[in-house]
Image (cartoon, rainbow over all chains, first blue to last red; front, side, top):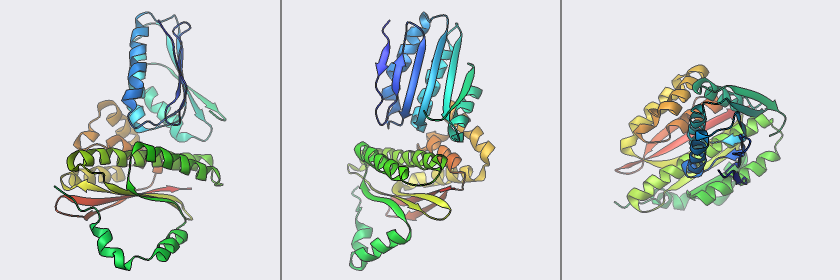
Length: 124
Length: 193
């Protein structure tokens, strides 16, 4: 299956979904007006990937900003990952002092049945 | 139904003084003010502009991020409301957005027309948000995120909760009757240092 590589824009994140090694990345900002349009292909990709996922899957979420419209789509992304039977880890990055981003990660951690690892960094 | 969007403006035109307007903006430390129809390009332009302006400010990154996040949410609320308005009235709604800085911090003020039938449900949402503490807002956010119930009564549900949560201050709002079917809704979000 093909990997996904999308460059970030002022409103959408950089996406690197690697089907070979199971490393998935969302990095930058996610503030499009219509998030579904952007996330639908990504969610479909994970759906296909989950059928023959590697022994380990890691999603690195390195978002600087995301809007509430993206928050629903992110939840759908995590829900799709939840269905993978092999181990999945989500690394949730947040910039130091960015309590809002840390809390957002904790919210998902409480909802989703995948271990979230909170990683504080100086700059995303 | 045709709505005279310029009614207020016509009525005030004789009294309008550009110098007073300028002085008011100066006095209130207005970083940005916009009035007009909104579309996705404009949302992008305003976001870019305010991001550059915030970069030059001395506040903590934490405050800047809050201002940016809340502004994006406010602008996108306006954008979606306008799309709905346009569908019904076949014209764009003029909205107003302003960002001002005072001693306590920042204020993001928006104004737009809202269908009278939605006023009550909107008011009750705002009242509910204002009545909750930090922990309760977090819980409400999670419930709406997973179940989506709050927003069914006319959109902007999760957005408003998020705005309230990030601001940490009560949302100030007002509804002024505009014509037979619309009210002017104003929202003042404070981001204190």
